[in-house]
Every structure is written in structure tokens, then in C-alpha cells.
Image (tube, rainbow, N blue to C red):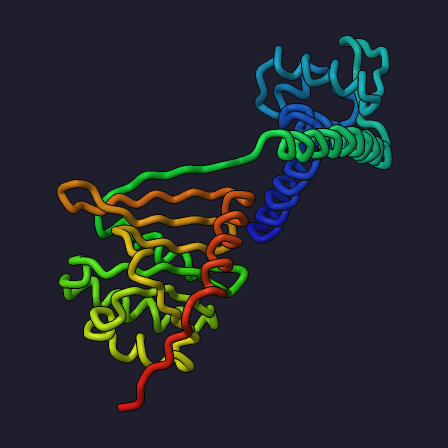
Length: 275
């Protein structure tokens, strides 16, 4: 008997979940199921059976009548009710489906408007950060490049006297290699970089890298990294603190890529010397 009781509770709970999904309140669901088991009850009587507040029961009964889910009969103690045929519950599904179809049309129109607005109003994001953590954060971000290409102007700096950051750069290079992301690197002070990152700077084929040398007159105190729709600039304040400016914009990144490629094609390819 205990097992049977457990099954009944589970069935009732499941039915409540189903009926509420299709638009009935929990009280309406309980009243409907209660009248399936106890036909021809007044609203007051079914409220007692279900241990439900009378006013809540009357409200639920009126709502179920309007949905065509209850049938009323004149009785000696007042209007009595029984539940309509369970097949009538399919009407709830039809109503819900019609509502969802209408909402789908509205959602589709809303999406079309958003697409139109996206063309009118560009979504440009500019972020200004500082410190070595921000430098590393943006480097990690570039590891998700969808184009599998990073354009970079690498600038030597006292940053590379930080042993922890040097180790971070080495790990970054290995992760980039494993993700098969190619890198183009414009460099001026190659000897300095080679002293800090010998493997990374000389084993170009292994690290999916090509290095080209900029003329000295194009040297300045900034680094540049471009990937996908992102332009990342690492600059320095007067007191030598890192300032990281990140611009996310499809059109600006395209401009910067074109300028980078223009310079790239006019620079000298660096071939590591065999030792």
C-alpha cells in the first residue's frame, strides 16, 4: 500500500507540472484533478476535500468554467460540478501553441529590427587598463583568435626583466602553437628579444612565426597586437607604467590590419642564423 501511495503522489505531481505549463494555475490544476476523482461536488465541498481556501477554490472553479473544463449541474446544496472529458485538455495545448506562434512572429520582427539597428549603430568597445596583469589578460584573449592569425608589433621593455612575465610569454607561445595560431611579428630590437626568448625568436617554424625587421626610424615606445575584431595597444605613461588600450570594432580593426599588412610587405624578412 505504501508503494501505491507513492506512485499516486508522483503522478499527481507530474500532472500538476504538465497542466501549469499549459496555462492552468496550481489551484485550477488541483480542482480539475479533484473533480475527476470526486464528480458532482460543490465548490465548497471540493475545497474541503483538497484542504483549499474557499475563496481560492471559487476563483479556480470560475476560471475552469470559462475555459470549458468544468460542467455545472443544479444540486440540492447548490451548483455541483464535474470535470469535462480529459480530451478537452488538448484545447490548452492548442491555445498555448497559438500563443507561442504569435510570440515567434513578434520575436522574429524584433530580431530583424535589432539587426537593422546594429548596422545603423556600430557596437564599438574601448577599454583602458593598466599593469602587467592587463597585458597578460589581453594576450590570453588573443589565444581565441578565430582567424588563427595575430599581427604584432613587439616592443622590448623593462617588462621583460620580470622573470615571471618572461615565463608567462613562453607558456603563451606554446599555447598559441598548440592552437595552431600563426603570428606575424614586426621587430626592431631583435637582439634584445633573442636574449630573453631564444627558442621563441629563432625556432620560427615550430612556433608558427614569421619575423620581419622594422627600420629604426619606425621605432617608438608602443606595442601593437591585432586579431579578429580587436586592436590591442600597449603603451607607457611618463612614469613607465603600462597603459593598455583595447578597441573592439570590426571596421577599425580592418583598417589597422590593412595598414599593418602594407608595412609588412615593405619590410625585411628575418632569417634566424643557425648556431
